[in-house]
Length: 613
Image (cartoon, rainbow, N blue to C red; front, top):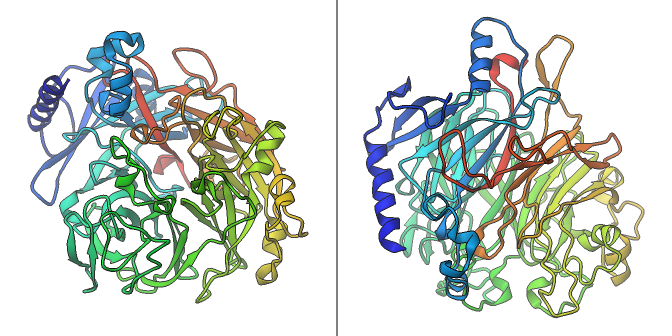
């Protein structure tokens, strides 16, 4: 397959280089599909390369744009989904060896579309409940010339005037989109590997009130050895995808405003913080999740893993400590020079797992802050450990973190026969409601038989916790899951979170619900959308990273949220081709052409500026 792959890549690059540069313009080329209009936007990157985004607007999108121009038509809300093309590079070497294409009819079908690299894209889906186009993909904005970006995360929430910051996990590139005029969008900038020499593998973003963003670059510097950051500090790294990672501030034009080391200047625990190859100063600094309280001047980042060791093909046996157990807090009083305040190791819990990689603090993937002025707390979730941690005060010099919930408590409600429910169940997205009443959490689920023939696996689910009593306790919180009974039944202390809702997600693949976002918009009586703290629905996507061995069924689902935190699948958010609930990204044809299946990693609710007050 190598020669065809190279030819296809060369063809894509050649096509991209021939595109018309500059501004937003109607493409001279024919529409990819009948009735589709293409609009091209491009920028010059810092290395002189032309980076493009091409809109592929369906008839529904064109009608919306025409109605707006005429001052008519209903205002729309959209769900943006950052998705990658699915192709042969998502298949591990072991899969190819054990299941040759010649005897695998699923992979043999669509070999010209599904096997070869094609453009990655930002899908624009009509999320206007009650609309005739509800659930339809009305635009696919393809990026070029880079392919195989492995689209990963955007920011957690959108506010009016923000740009969209979207990262390419493998391409080490951050794209910056202007979405003010949805359903069409333009490219505002691109941050390339040469713009962040001290870090690699961009993961997640938090957008500040000035519309610039902080990004977590989980991997080490582009080249092994010492790297000097923008604040003059130096750290020694073991190279691309290794350690230590960094915090990058990015402007609305995609330019790097600052690079700050996530690692201490001294060695961290060399047993707990292993690195491959070994570093002279051990570090667990591989920041993944990131959230900010600007009013408190604090940034919180959670360390997940040394990333290249998760997707090596084939993956070599690793120490469980390659999955990190640390959360870092930074002072951002000087926004271009975050100061590392604390590095906290999450405590181990009461479970004694057969696999050490399943212990509670392994793989602290995500963190989320509280929102209201009277609250200073934050939460963190472990992907391999399957638990939720909480600290009541992120401004403290040494925040105290405690385990406050085990995923097993939610899993056993959905499946009373759960065995080792929380252990490496793939906990991902975690987010507080904007009114600080609830906490939402998406869980991929551990595959059945992962441990042995008795392992029923972990539940694939989304759940809600009522956190009001926990936050009301302030810094005097007593909740701590430290007994084996609390793993199954929930915390004993009166301020512990309680399960308000849970929803099983059907996914028969190796993956499940990994990411999500909450809808912070509501249509008001004046006919305009307004931002709200009243969460009535969330969206989730079922995909992780295929090369890690954890894939997903590539569906994006809408979930209704009741006033008490209950969760119900929105069966009216249907795939336009199949008529079934959830939008399926496994399809033959997109507005941009017959490119086959795609991998939806992250999503975001957005309303065009003119429709938002």
